[in-house]
Figure 1 (cartoon, rainbow, N blue to C red):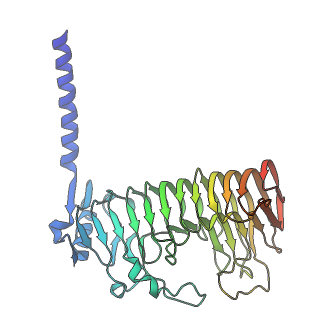
Figure 2 (figure 1 turned 135 degrees about the horizontal axis):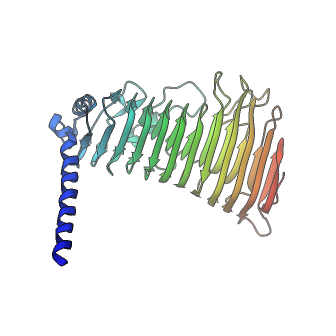
Figure 3 (figure 1 turned 120 degrees about the horizontal axis):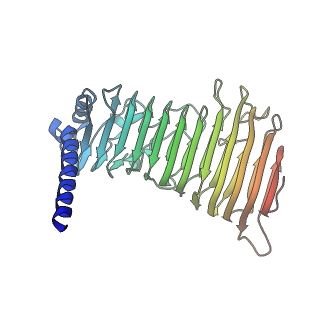
Length: 398
């Protein structure tokens, strides 16, 4: 009986070995070192990476482009599809960006027109931001040339970005543009709280985007959702420092698309300027809408503005305030949001006088304010139609 079991076990192990070795045999690894890259952190490895990408893109089979351990200086690259098979970029080492004068456009690593992409490996993308931030001129309202985004995904479908880190981007850390079905998991993003325009993840004109189990601390929004997006989910994200998770700003430019379908759930905000925020410009050029949002099961720790709708958003010294925002906000749920506000007004719902917010729900809100003795948190509302239920700290204004 024992011999029979041993034989069965041996055959099982043999089968697993054949499956494993067969899978390994079918995998082709394109190591950037084999294409001339040097891991000294000083020699430009851009061409080696692009050549490795092109070779893998033309390979009809399971591939892996490998940036191994070490420090690699890689300049501005565009990694373009379509490719014959799904693409995998495995980054194990440190990838370092060059100085700003080496850039000719607004991206450092840009992936374009790829269907089936994985970026993984546990490595780091260092944008070398501190030397570029003093040259950021995009915070005063004037027309400016944005600094480069570290990782840009344009016209990408069915992608996974998992287990990587981005530090000190010159501008945005990650931009997802005109893409579908993109999952970001276990991503770490960091920049100092005073670094300008270093949004963690910015989403534009995309659908089916899911951000989960990630830690984001920057000098701007942890996640920002621009116009033209649908079906965005943000779950189990730790945000701080930064400006929180923001929808917008919306309603500034003509031909903007609607934002439909956002879920922010099981997230924690620590020492951020805002928690969850919807922001739109006054004097919108066209009518658009933002609808079907759920902000649920959130923890606020010393957040200056935990819950915000601001339809008079004006980050500059002067804005056109002649007419109200034309962005219609509707079907928004704030549920089970608890913790502490760093300011007296914990809930601020400032909606448009032209198109008031519709069907806004506050449910089980518990946000304390630890201010001077005797003061407690407050809520303010204008042009809001909705309901409140359950615990309401501060007392609801709708």
